[in-house]
Image (tube, rainbow, N blue to C red; front, side, top):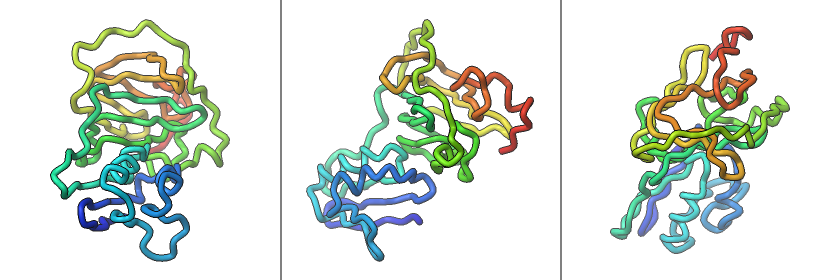
Length: 207
């Protein structure tokens, strides 16, 4: 499901393709995002513009976006591009992401290799019992002269995700394990997660 709901001062858009059902929206304000509604479930005028903006920007997958109509600031890319490694779960990316001809600021990308909606997470890691630490070993990381800017994400054929652009790879507790301008991230089989080690070739990974 995808579409835009127009409000008096702000329009809210939703992309079902990118949603991971974190429920931050319905838990954050069930009047704006109504849980288990049979019909329309997004009500942009049920809270102040600033509260709706905060709810949207708290959506980790970027499935919820907005367009202000009150002259206030639109969402901006972060000043530091980050790829956060979730415990036994996906990669939460915050950047000026360029992927599949679209540009957005937040995305939750598959790292278990099981998603039926690659490169996006669809929570298949839960059913598959995917196990991978969110606290990879810390390594000495280079210093980047620039920490923001476009981050191009390319799913390679039968292989890893290729990220090109400034990015910091960050653990679940916020430690930076790598700073990079180009990196290949694992399909779910690597012994060096979250980084690719070529295991996709050995196991015959298909995507």
